Amino acid sequence: MNAPERAERQVSMNHFDLHCDTLGRCLSGRKSILHNDYSLSVERGLLFDKWVQTFAVFVDDDHRGAKAHQRFLAQVGKLKQAMAESDRIVPYDKDNIREGVCNAILAVENGIALGGKLERIAEFAELGVRILTLVWNGENELGGGFESETGLTDFGRKAVRELEKHKIIIDVSHLSRMGFWDLCEVAERPFIASHSNCFEICPHQRNLDDLQIKEIIRRGGLIGLNFFPVFINGESDASFQELRRHIRHIIALGGEDCIAVGSDFDGAAMPTVLSSVEKIPDWHKNLCKHFDDAFVEKITFGNAERFFRENL
Ligand SMILES: [Zn+2]
Image 1 (cartoon, rainbow, N blue to C red):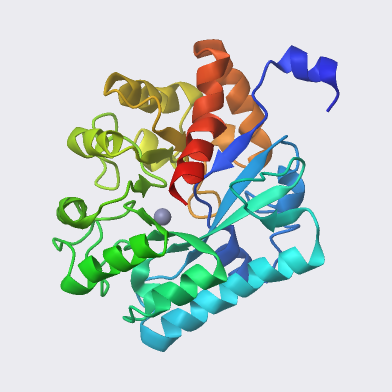
Image 2: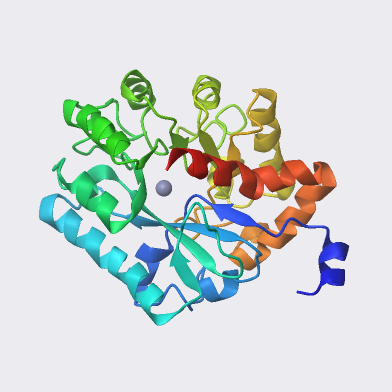
């Protein structure tokens, strides 16, 4: 993109996404994360100046023990394969975010991937895992998701300490309310909700209530805005305006430094206006009509960039 076009668009062209499920979708569909026709491919995302993309390795609640671990390794393999094939995707380095490439963060969505073994955490850290979502919707060895009545187990509490020791960021998206407050008793480092919105605006159990949002703010964490319409307005499609209501709500609670992006690309049905990564610039442009440029830069990139610089 040349300079006049950029000026005309008045958009922030950095993008930091805390969550997508493209690895799992590509594994099932036998596609590459470099080129595919899903919501996100590395090729189609190369329109940003600085682009940091978290790739979550999703392991569902039916995979246990060795099977869970195998599923994890297969997806990590997908990411490493893409990095071997192309110089357009590189491992994220908090001190050197490169322009014109995809700076990839490896995450694990569902602590079930630990296979019930605490020692796997050191192995994950070694493999480059930087974020771990403790649970998915149901229960695992660590605790319960939003569909359960379970908090954190003893193993879950031990896992939290071990994750913090290895500087793997804890992610509370999907966690039950009880699990959230159990975590607050043990956690000593800030944590994130990588892809969750506001319950007060859209009362879905996957969204965060005001007490949770205030606690994340108090601890200096992050909340990644999820584009899934069911978590924006409870319907099958959603507008920029409806997504903005969540932003304004978090600002009203004092969280302007905690708002980030957690698209959920390839993990959920996306709204028409944000159906794929190439539509992100339209969203930035729309945000710039309603908020000042410095704030737009913070929520689309700066807040997350600062958080990882300080906490990894
Ligand atoms: Zn998820």
